[in-house]
Image 1 (tube, rainbow, N blue to C red):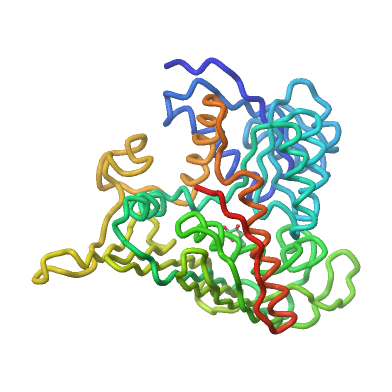
Image 2 (image 1 turned 45 degrees about the horizontal axis):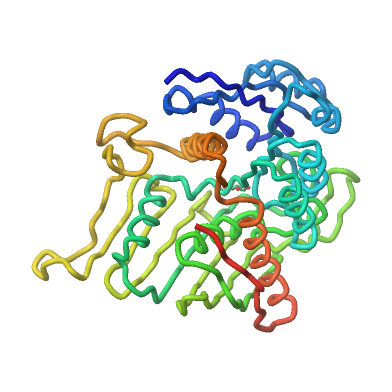
Length: 387
Ligand code: SOE
């Protein structure tokens, strides 16, 4: 089918995430030819005109803005995509929704629940199409895990385990604040590894295994002071450098989660494991195309872990790509999210996770941080409707 309808994108932010999303918009119609909608890279917006122009040149955006309010005011933009630091998500998303634009937002939706609730209200009042980029759901092996769980192949689930390990903040000389390093500044980020990394694990976990009801957590800030890029002065570091929590899911299973930026040797190691009555599943971001599956129902003489290379055409998303045996990568998760968003817009349905789904993840993050601060179990208040 020829792609006929344009979806004119206004991207706010030209950092790492701006690149991943732009790549998704550019590639999607080449590989998902059944979509009737074609994203058009209409404008990129950022405070530095020079950087915005350089980004626009590299990624072929048609124009540049330096004020997101001017971007939202434009009649030739259909969707606002937010790729800026977390403290700016709420005002941009609310203004975009109120202007009737579709809204796509990088995770987490905001710094905390209090900031997220008015965003969800604005999105739902305006009734605009929306999604939050929890991209790992759309790694085909993770999507396959969802299918196997939904088919009942694991039976009753007992355990959910996830890690997200990095090592990029170990040096005391690393400042806080500024490009990319805003992730170390609690004012901009809201939290450290909890909102940045565990939020991914929590989103995937609730998608695969349902809502998390209660949590008990501990956090640590290993480096207490860092120079702030904005002032040149040493300031207290108030983000969590590491966070461990355990939890109880609504289905009665137990969860164990760990994230840190101090695991020397690990750059972005997201792993998950689920143990059910009948079978278990394991996945590892560094082996993104593989899903490990243990089926207790196998003949006992050959029972063991199946090492499934998720590349055959009948596996999620794989009919759109290469021939069996060839691999996909990190960037494809974003192409898949764009494809699913466009398909949802065409069908008039939601693209999960919606802002409301992402609010539930933020509730868990808040409960985790509160639990660590108060050294007590916390209920999350999660009302998981997600699929
Ligand atoms: C942090 O280093 C980061 O880039 C996160 O912000 C992303 O969400 C994660 O996918 C990879 O790590």
